[in-house]
Image (cartoon, rainbow, N blue to C red; front, side):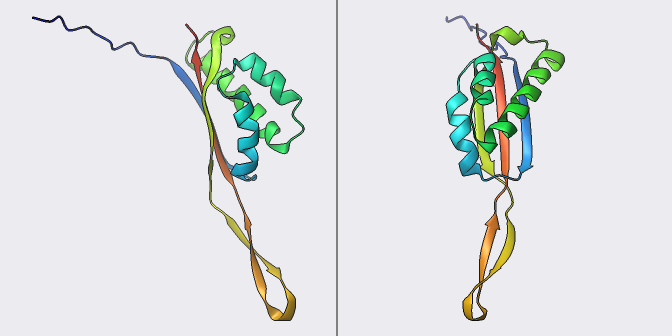
Length: 122
């Protein structure tokens, strides 16, 4: 007879989500690929020196996720790392660009939903 081993160890995780950010997901992904799986302090230092507009969105979101981890989940800030981070497309605002001979082209102003998931390293 085999013994049943309880592997129900709940891993604490803290999340933060920014929805409807007025920036293209493609542009944000350039920034988030640089900080994935990094410790949060290192990620904040990296974001501080990236000259991209998306870095400001991600930096503010990461600080929010750190505050959530510390205040809501009682996690140790020094052990936190970015377990998941992704940017999905949100709704598009459609605008018209007048063109020659009475034509009109569509401009798609893209939005993003950015999500950060933090976990503690063992």
